[in-house]
Length: 419
Image (cartoon, rainbow, N blue to C red):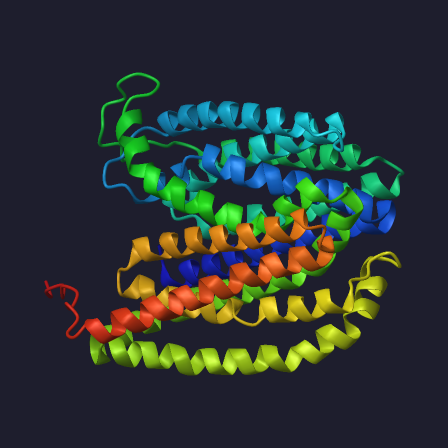
């Protein structure tokens, strides 16, 4: 793959990732504008339940398909994906149908979309392994744009929430055919005998277990405040919270981009100057990010409600204290990604999962206690988000500093000899 094509593919993949995030926000926004907080809340509550379940049900297969040294046929991964989706769908349907505040048609529409999406995910992995990144990014962008268009058309035509999500399912189904045709010949590099429709399944699942656990933890963390609010508050409260919480999502996107951009230079510095200098550089960049976010807090506190009402509608307002806590929750998010990148450079991979588990436990405990004590649910949701972000920050900061102090001379990577 030529460098220019690889660079163009990387750019398109990045645009695809951002367009996906914008599409997700757009759906919440248009549901809020047309159906009010209750519509946005019903969709968000179901999404908070659906996402962690289906992340676990995906079994980390994309990562294993792309990275495992042994290569099994694509059909093995597809069959495992179908089994995981069947199990995940059953769990989600059982949990969602037990609630009396969700529409059955919306539940079915959302599980359909996610099922098709995760089948596409396997075909996308096959395209990625063929190093056709530009085409993969283009397909992702097209899917996201047409999904947004289909949802908007359904809503503006007077369709229900279920009809809008169903329209997005039709887009995904169409693109599933495109992905299937695009993959073309596969299994050219298979190293393992087929061994039946599930040949190699045991080895694949053993390799995928740590990935599944890690991704599942991250999925729970991403939706934790909404998951808790959905159990104690009605859909309208969840909708108002979700609208404001997209500021947290934006902060996570900024942090994720910083992580992706800086991890390579952190690695270079680690091998050239050592662990402590790498840690100090992360601290300096974090201070700059903290200063930028702190400058935004007065805007969030004093202009937050006018902006929320303008963007989403007149019913979308937060208590003043919730806005303050929202600002506090956002402060450490981007710096956490920097220290997470340094921990990865130090090869402290298990530490990140441990930190997430502790953060989820502390935030869940705090949120449940507040909600059980009849604390204002919007304030409780923001406190949960703040506990999660700050616990993670202190965790990655402390472990990065500790590792930097202990690592003396890094093992240099092997140098490829000139032929």
